[in-house]
Each structure stands twice: as C-alpha cells, then as structure tokens.
Length: 210
Image (cartoon, rainbow, N blue to C red; front, top):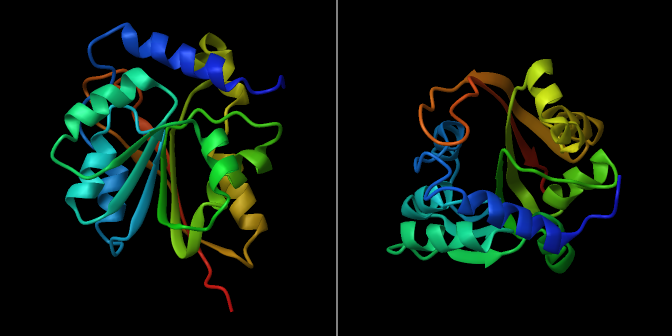
C-alpha cells in the first residue's frame, strides 16, 4: 500500500461532499443510538463525523464530544447542524489525530463506516484502540458489502474492515472484551448510504488497568 497522503485524502473528501448540498441522511446512526444509550456518558470521540448527526446526538445525551473529519466541507455543515451543542469539531483524519493524541482519553470511540487506510490491519485498529480509556468502549460499524459492490468499488478492499477489528480485539482478549459482534439490518432510505441493508457491528470494552 502506498504512503498515506493526508492532504490528498482531505481534498478527495471535500470533492465528494461538494457534489451535493447534503451527503448523509441527517439522522444519527441506529446502532450508535441503540448502544450508546446503555453506556454512562463521558468523553466521546466521533471518528469521521461527516455532517455531524452522531456527534450532535451524543452531545444532546450528555456526552462531552470531540468530532473529527478530514473534510472541511463536512465540518462546516456539522457545525451548522450542531450550532446549539458544545461539540469540539476538529478538521483531521484519524491517522493524524491518533499521531498527535496517543492518549487513552476517551470513554467511547465511535467509528461509523470509517475509511481508514493503514500499512496493515493491526495499525489501522490501533489508531482507534490507543484512544480508548481503560474501562471505555470502542464501537465500530461498517456496511456488509457483497462481491459485486467490491468489484465496482475496489478501493474498499484496502479499507479497515469490521472483521479485521474483531480479529485484533479477539487476539488481545487480555485487554479487550467483545460485547457485541453481530450483523444488523438497517433501514436508511436517504443519503449516500441508503443502498446498504446490513451493518456489521462490533462493540468492545477495554479492561481497567491494575
């Protein structure tokens, strides 16, 4: 895999968002809502926040939210959507953010359909896991894609998958407990992701340090 280019990545996502006035449905992710309502609010990181629906929902339900996205176009829309919330909006991809933070500081790291490129799957997962505080949760959700979709979009073959996240967490069972690992039907009827009918969901909890 080629070296990750943050500027090119940001430019690509700005171009995608500029193709329409709104890319996504404007509603929070169903899996996030179902799962986060059972977790005591604390500090949350929304990875690839897009137009801000998930971050705004978390903030309105008691979470102290940091939301990151490489697209400045998306963040401008997110700030407008969350004008009445106290979300910290940061223009950054997860690779750059993780390199700066390197701290176990979030009680929830939420990654909804992230496009994460890394030299290898373990590194991709570690961008996320290293930001989860002891006792905190990692929520990772991605579409289940069929072979035909992959043929049409070969770039997704190189993106961090739910299966790679599950395999990493299972291999580190001394530190991580997988609480949810399942496929869920989704009924989104608008926005760019409306064509996907099934999500693969992973929720894991990091053990407390002794």
